[in-house]
Amino acid sequence: MPNESQPVRTLIVGEPFYRDQLKELLNKQYPDMMLAAAEDGEKAIKLIALFRPHLIFMDITLPNRNGLNIARKMRAHGSNAKIVLLSNDDLPEYRKATEECGANYFLPKATSTGTDVLSLVSKLVAVTPNSAA
Image 1 (cartoon, rainbow, N blue to C red):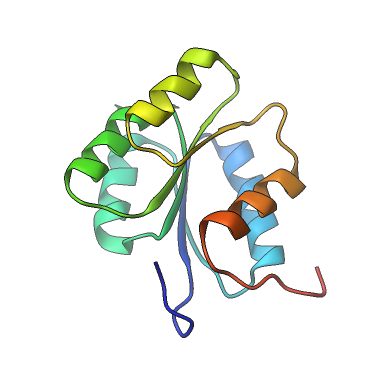
Image 2: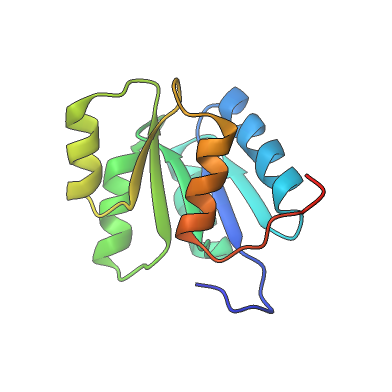
């Protein structure tokens, strides 16, 4: 995790609409957070290697890869990034698979609010919110 002088690096991987909304929410609340985004698994893997994120929001279902497999490989290679897997479907098997692959949290996109996301971010990484937000 980052130290106090280092901004949190966050990667958002998934479909454009949700990705853009999440990016806007995080940028408004945490203006010092460094944000990167990818729309598919192949680009995510490249960005993970280059950007070295502390926090990753990633869809389970991605073009060119699967978010569960990416998370599993990250853990196998010793990554300690906080991984939040996302899905439109809040299925028990997705929650179980999230736990089994080593991700830190499952977030159902359809029922999670901005407040839920911000609460989760503050729980997973040490960031100071923008008090004016």
